[in-house]
Length: 145
Image (cartoon, helix red, strand yellow):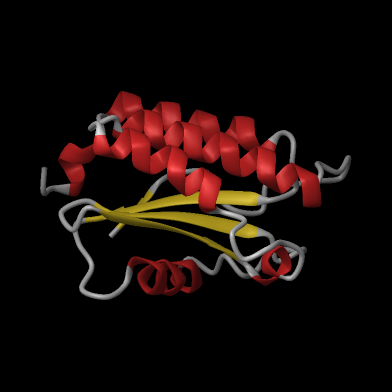
């Protein structure tokens, strides 16, 4: 599978967007998914570039998270903003990456993304619980490059 368009069906994309909404019900954190064909640099470095390109650092608590996937390169990364990194251990995203990697290795990309998103929401809830005045600061739609 080498095309971004073939990575997920429209229905699968809608399920992933719904999972983002579900995960964000319990946290003030903001989660985005970005999918592109390939990367020539380390996936975490590309995730950081995309994070800034999407202006995800513009959240009130600096608690945005991007899940980055390079389809043809078969690489992915999770990057959390400054507000998260100041509060959590360096291995904070490891369990989420493990869940996703297990599903990805078996070709279950939709399920990997959904479970990764829900795991990220649970992790974020510990440090950034949902607030009464919380607004959705970033789009839940999947971005593509």
